[in-house]
Length: 224
Image (tube, rainbow, N blue to C red):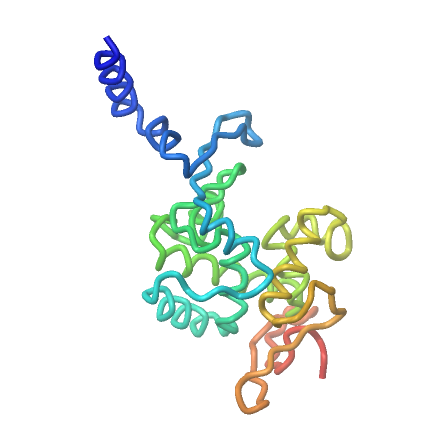
């Protein structure tokens, strides 16, 4: 009788992969913003990396050239991209948030589509889309990193509406966490942030200024 019950249980799990995933203990099921049930597939190691106060070593050495290539293509500091990936997913390529954001850099399906990312679960495509979107946010907010990071989390509309980092606990904590991981400091929120490249030389970054002109600057956060 017990064998029959077990066989039936596994038959059900095989028929419904979502239930099979839940049975592994690495996932939990929550109700998303749309009211639909969402499977969050995050294991303990990924969660520990995501919540860590320090920049963690890359769990897969194959990610390093991807991050370097796409960061360079968008003129971003690779360390900033790593900080964002860690805070977003803990390097979980199959991550799905309760709002439906997907992959390493947690791309929303609509955003992925707009960026012509066909498979946001593919690490290379996901990093490409995430770095493109981060560059868009930096250009939109005149190179102010803290505002770009806030927009990455809460959307540019929320940042514009509140005239700065929105007063959402999640977003404020997220901005502090990403900046801390990037800068290797505590979770204090600086008024301006800059990128120092090796040899104390600042790498020039191309941004759009308030008059919509392209500006070449060595300061991402407005500091001299």
